Length: 314
Image (cartoon, rainbow, N blue to C red):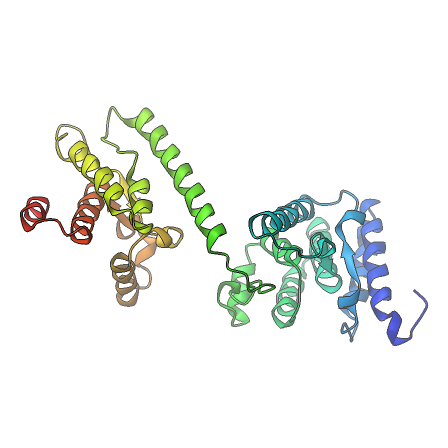
């Protein structure tokens, strides 16, 4: 740590980070903050990319770090198994030295109730925004750092919802993993519907396959979608004595399951009034309405007769 030549700059920063971790574990928070500050004030981090914080060497100090390391390992597993990707494992459970120093400093300041923490968070985000190369663990730590001011600071920096922080470490086709995640989400949403029907079926008519129908339509399985939607319409339309108030939301996370027409309609709503998505009534589609829409679209795709289309529309 006494060396001052350029080749040892990265080792100097890395050693200070590990030293700060040791101070943190022994409760010497102020000394740990000062040690992190030495890294953050370093003028040249160009060599720091060659020396990274090894997750395996860190003691138990923070749940976020443990979670980030666990998710990074899972990410590596998905790459290696689903895509037969032979990415070097040493880049799985590591953090960039400078970014980790910022993260640790913020955690220390939150423990000591430091009043200047906002400025450090801003510098942390600015540092990541300007950094060309970082690791999966760096992104996960940022996401897991729960501070209410993060979004406001991103706005002040001109970064819209931190959309700059997208990992581009590979050009692999990720369509397969996206499809698997969507399928898993639909299965969980269907389970949720089944629980709702079990608990509230006596006061409201609830169909449990609306998300399955949406997913089938997205996959181009129009026959399956038509079958499910027709069953849902029969259930919802001919139970007039019971309320049929359950809805499907069209918020951002469900956009992937919706077709182009519905997405375009949502976009037009936002153009007219950007605040409309804050109101529940503006982001909800009744199960009956959605089922009828899917029935009509599937009949058009499957080239059904005009008679059947008229019957659906009427």
